[in-house]
Amino acid sequence: MKFRLDRDVLAEAVTWTARTLPQRPPAPVLSGVLIHSQDSSSISLSTFDYEVSARSTVAAEVSEQGTILVSGRLLAEISRALPNKPVEITTEGTKANVVCGSSRFTLLTMPVEEYPALPDLPELVGSIDSDEFTHAVAQVTVAASKDDTLPLLTTVRVEIEGEKITLLATDRYRLALREVSWQPANPSFETAALVRAKTLSEAAKSFSSAGRVDIGLQTGSGMDRIGFLAGGRITTSQLEDGDYPHVRRLFPESTPIQAITKTQTLIEATKRVALVAERNTPIRLTFSQGQVVLDAGQGDDAQASEILEATLEGDDISVAFNPHYLLDGLGALGTDYVRMGFTHPNKPVEFIGLNDPAGEIVDNYRYLLVPIRFTA
Image (cartoon, one colour):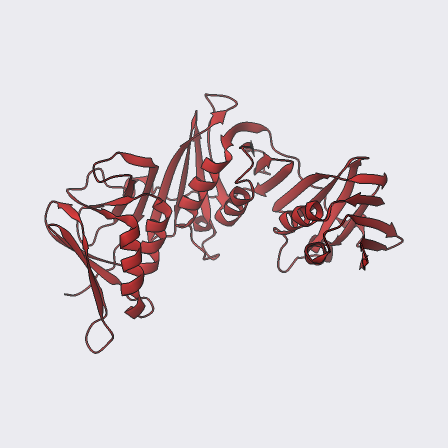
C-alpha cells in the first residue's frame, strides 16, 4: 500500500477516528486504526471495539491499493507532530513507513485478517441541524450518570415521534429533557432508543460544524444500533437494552412558587459561595421578594454569603443544592435569565431558560434538580 496526503488532513482524520479507541482493548488489534484505500483518490480510516465504530473518508493520492492496521494512538500522536508538509505512507512487509519532509517513522502493522468486520450504517431515518444537535445533546448529557454500575442511567433516552426528537437523561439526582425538531424520512415514524451518553456526546461534538447530521437506526434485530453520518464521517454505536425509568412524571404539572434571576450572575455567585462548601455539602438559596441570598458553611467552618436581585411569585422559600449539579444545570441553559419553579422546599426544582424576565421558554429545555434536605 502506498498513499500521499496533506499532513493536516491525516492528523485530523486519525485523531477523530482514534478518539473511540478503548483504553484497555480486549484484543491487541482493537487498539489499531484500519486504513483502507477506497480508490485512487481516497482512503478510509476506521476503528471498532465491537460496540462503537468510527470511520472517516479523506482525499489522498493512492498509488498502490491495500489495507493496513497500525496503532491508532501512536499514529495520531505522530501525525500531529509532523512538519507541515505532505505525508507519504508506504508498507514494506509487516512495517509501515511514514515520511514527511525529513521526518521518518516506522510502525509495526497488525494482522488485518484478525480485525472484526465493521458494522454498516443503519438505515437512515432522518436528519438534523448539526449545531442544534450538538447543543441539545450537551444540555441533556450533563444529567447522565457516570456510574457504570448503573448502565441504564449512563444512557440518553432518544424518543422519536414524527418531526420531534426528545432527549432524556437522569442520574437520580437531576433530570434533563430537551425537545428538538428534525426532518424524518418517514413523518409517521415513532421509536425510542437508549444511547450511551458518552458516545452521543462525542458524536455530537465531532459533527458540530457539519451543517446537517444524518441519523440511522436499527432496532428489533438483536443487533440494535444507531449511526450518525456527516462530512464523510460515520459513527455507529450499539444500543443499550432495558426499561428506562418513567422520569417524565417527575416534572411538576405546575409550580406555585417561581423565581427569576440572571443566569450568569447566579453562576458566578454560586462559584464564589461554593468555595467554602466542603465536599458533598450544599449551598443554600433563600428567596424572598426582590432578592435571593446564597450562603454556605456553618458553625466553626468557613462561611460565605451573597445577595442577588431576583423576582419572586409566591411564598418565600429556601432550598439547598449540590453546587456542582446546580452549576451544570445553569450552564446548560445558555440563556440570559433562569426561571426556577418550586412546589416544596424538599421537592425537585425545575429550571427553565428565558431570554428576558417576561419572555417565553427558550428551546424546550427543562432541568430538574433534587434539593438536599437541611436543618435551619
